[in-house]
Amino acid sequence: MTVDRRQFLKLAGLGGVVYASGLARAADSYTSTQDEFFFVQLSDTHWGFEGPALNPDAKGTLPKAVAAVNALAEQPDFIVFTGDLTHTTDDPKERRRRLAGFRDIVKDLKNPNVRFMPGEHDASLDRGEAFKEFFGATHYTFEHKGVSFIVLDNVSDPAARIGEEQLAWFRGELAKRKPEDRIVVLTHRPLFPLYPAWDWATRDGDQAIAALMPYHNVTVFYGHIHQEHHFKTAHIEHHSAKSLIFPLPPAGSLPKREPVKWDPAQPYRGLGFRQIEAEARPVEYKLTELPVVKA
Image (cartoon, rainbow, N blue to C red):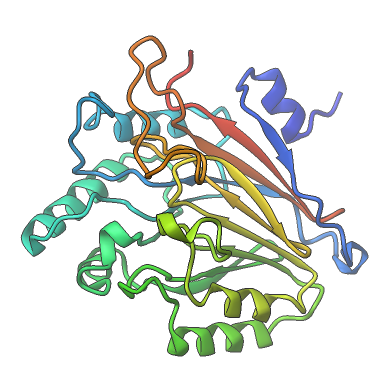
């Protein structure tokens, strides 16, 4: 009997929630060389954060997540961290110390193919200067098995903008693609105005979304809001990832944005990472949410 990856995940007892993006346009244009693959998304690790009421294991959660990824029965094609690698600090030396600490922990990932992007905690106070010293460019592209990945930086500008220069670069990159090409955008903040009052938006994100509209097979993966969330703008799907430090409440559910307190009876509740299976026929992304520590 042949067992595909989705069946394997189920048989392996990994649990989690599976969400299938319904993107199926122009699938017949793809060739057999564009194989299915999967990658892992982690987000909002906030290395350097301290707050026992929110996470008494603040120094242990990231290493546990690294161990959980290493323990996957099948290793992903690559791993991506969608921002807020570290917790914000006004001290440039401390910012670099935290970035170095994060880097040294994730070096223990046995998969060498790891991609990084900044969050506002990493980059907004120095426009990404320290982040670039450790991890390189804050926006870039890469290709993998027929999918174009575009990393957008909507955090280095303290005003929460992508900015005209980067938007021009983004449009130029899109111009190299055909309308039916498979495109994945990776960013930190949501591109759509999820809840601007809580800084859950990108001020010029509408321009990025407008640039993406002519492309039929687009999916956006982001972080920032510390919870799983799914949304559509026309045919473009947006999926946020859970945090690895503390969860946040649903948008507008409280008078002010406050982290969810740690529950000793349910440690690590609301924290986790995800596997994303990319399939070409039809164009789909199967999301499997995984815990930091198995119950």
